[in-house]
Length: 235
Image 1 (cartoon, rainbow, N blue to C red):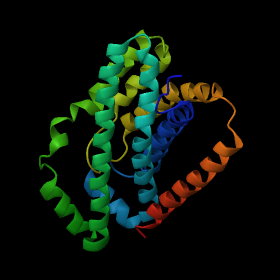
Image 2: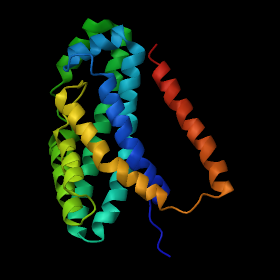
Image 3: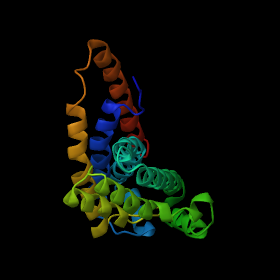
């Protein structure tokens, strides 16, 4: 028997949870202007809401690595080269968005300790500084288009859901980026593309044993507690 990681339970859950978290985060921060000075001002004025939005976006990106891996496994059965390139590029892009989330968190802390004006000045001074991911930014958008071609040509996604997945390539990138129309289109398209696949993957899994349930419940409760504590940490 060949073992795959992530397995069907992990991959299926990620296909549902990852897109849902990203869409929720996008909608939560939609009332505020897109660029970083306005985002930092919103953090000072609405700390709980903004912390929840950015934490959900971070969690969604972390979960998406398993969703992408699960999708790539299915593409690879028919189109292994497209699966390899698409999976690699999208995964690097997910890592880059996670890196951006770390910078966002640091900026939130600066807002708390330096005030909005001090944090805005600090972010503005370092906004254009180069780092490893400065040279890999193309993966954030381009990777999704490569993955879409593989998903469509392999028959894993039909035309409508392939277009939904391609919309994720329109999602704006960078540090302290809020929500615009393309943000909602991209994350909603991701839900259209992957959530039904995730539900199908989960429905195909064997019935969980009592041991599986007893293991999963405390893990889920623990992760929920960590996320709740993180959201409350800004206040």
